[in-house]
Length: 88
Image (cartoon, rainbow, N blue to C red; front, side, top):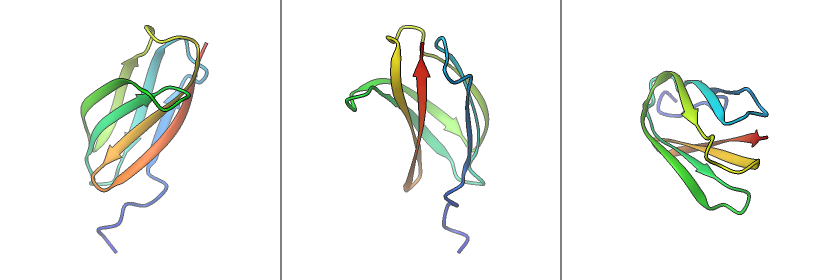
């Protein structure tokens, strides 16, 4: 149905691995992303970005975070999408 968000929402995160300057390119097909949460390896929230929108690209500055693996959690209405990023 039209109200469902397709599971293959278009989200690109690059470069990956990254030195902390991360570009997120996204298109949620008419649905609005309210937040991107950044979670560390144990699931602790280490950064939050708000007012994301429906489509576009954003620069996320994660240079203050330690090297390691992180999860970017996209909150899109009733759905959540996760993408992994490695900071070097």
